[in-house]
Length: 259
Ligand SMILES: O=C(O)c1ccccc1NCC(=O)[C@H](O)[C@H](O)COP(=O)(O)O
Image 1 (tube, rainbow, N blue to C red):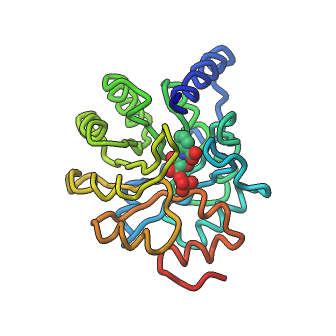
Image 2 (image 1 turned 180 degrees about the vertical axis):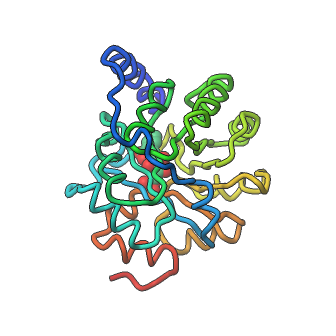
């Protein structure tokens, strides 16, 4: 079976080439004071990075009604530690403009969730108001990961470095990742298993901030993560499908009754 990541990366390469030809479109957010994602995650007993996610390759359209500004505002009011905004258009129905809209509305750190393969995407992320971005180990060679991580820091941004297994975790640590996301989604089958996070968590040094990503759907999942010493989660679909996102965040974080 073809790995979805290979398909996405082929499209991304064309997108980046086109962007380089057009040149970078600078937004006023270029000089915006950055918020630290790492600090925001460490400040909470359990931190949720709440994701603005319109669609996905595994689930198709997730949110028919979609107002990124409003969603960001609700996430902030309901106690999210940070926001993740999908900016990939062909596979996730995202856009950099959605990130800029969220930036105008909230003061939380915002993560650009995309498939980053080139420095121009880092500059774009900064220009549209991101504080951090995603670097996926499986999408890059170890050398490219190091280069992009260095360039990210030079721009005053942070990176969530995403891994799926022990080998990728070693590469992320070796590259100097300070925030590591363990993705519970198998990119070949789309199956999600919290076990991926639970088993890898023990192998992560204390000074590295760990985030469990994908397939987190209820308060019991959060309790299981906490038991394994994991203090942060990135959650998309469960929040995006909830009619009352504030109530859903309260339920996920504290087990409060859903309304
Ligand atoms: O969500 C997908 O279907 C997907 C497929 C292929 C590559 C990445 C994918 N998702 C990106 C993400 O990392 C998730 O949006 C994020 O972890 C939140 O996951 P969820 O809470 O399950 O929506």
